[in-house]
Image (cartoon, rainbow, N blue to C red; front, side):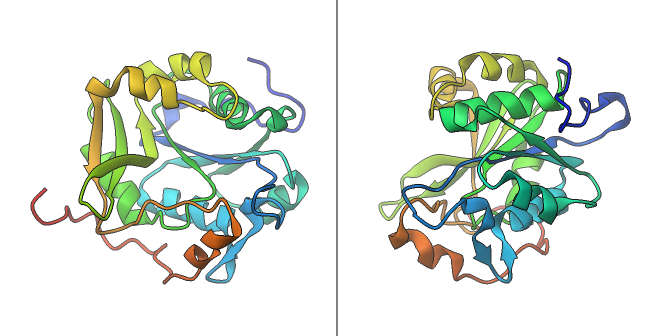
Length: 229
């Protein structure tokens, strides 16, 4: 696929080790009413900066950030950062599926990719490390978190082996992203319990803003498995 003028060429996979990170940061945050969620601040940094740092510190070889609403501000924040590239999705208003397709197309084929939306302030390097460490060739591996009853729920980040990314591009649509694919192939999706590291919550509405008030965990603490896993 030919890159648009404001995108870098697809990544040369031969020179890289570790998965590529992909942050979906294109939304306008309409339900929240405070502008793009990528620009919300947590621990003195924007959410997009925090997610990029967590993915890189946790083991991703590079991070692609898909922009839409607030694209210029996000691109300015990330300009000059090593191993970080921005891919603008001109069709971002069609939903997260469009941004997922845009990001995977920008990365190019043949790469294992770890995906997360930008509105997940609890993701830390140790969680990224744990998901990467648990991943096996050919699989899909996802962080999971327990609810109050102890039930484990699939969450983010999700690590797609290279053999799955083309199917993800085909399946992604509207605001569904890869959800339908993950449900259809749930028998091969490996869940990694990260409940001791992250509550799994995202920011959608004003009542969720308390999630921004949490300790800074973007310095890797090591991917120690939870007790009993």
